[in-house]
Length: 338
Image (cartoon, rainbow, N blue to C red):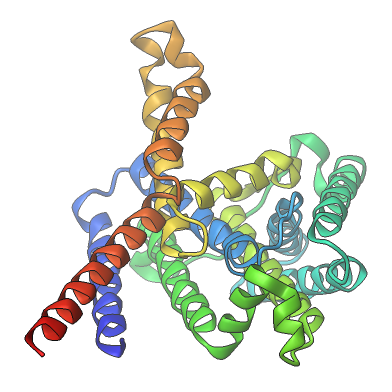
């Protein structure tokens, strides 16, 4: 088991190393921006997967935390000097506010059925969206506002997009391994047990409420960090970060890649962002491509049909079934010899 985990870890590190070299091979601005968006929404989708995939908690307002992170760093850096200190302060504000909101939402509803939590998060997201639209003196309303990010020293300023790319990639890799370690720990095993049968877990002596609240806070904070990276990469923020479509995007990324896999949301983010970019570019070929969502819907239906557990989830299931068949054959051979 440990050998397999070590092998997978080396594979992930190798992929991260290749991604790190990409901007030195292709440094087009549009390409770097596209990859940054993939990394940002991969983090956001992984945070959603902690709730849905590992704990069985459904959230319809996960964009609330994403928006809190985006606005926290944007407002802080627009009101203060654009320095690294103000950036760190914005990140701290994002973590504190998202953690408090996630804690309150969890305490109020997670002792009930999961759909109460889904409804409350949807209502809270709508409330934050309303506040952001009305509090124009701070948020800029629907128009949003731009802000400056810290100047980089020396020659790095001339390659700012590459630096942002590497910083976002590093953030995704570190958060991925952190969440991977969490889900493989005893805490992660309890969360999976809660997803499968919370009553049985409770009968074993575990109090499931603290675990649900804890994972809700962790998921909300990570989603807020994704919002921070999103705002910094664009240097612009508006009320769309609170839109329910942002949550639905995370849900689709998780389902396409594979619920409860962590790697799946990363793959789902890549598929969705690449589909959006390249299918939209086909608008000049034929008018039907102007509605890229229709084509993406077809892709999504095909994925669900041929990969019912998501791409990564289905592959893992097939590999597990193959290993089980091989073990059964080995046992049958040994029993035949005896």
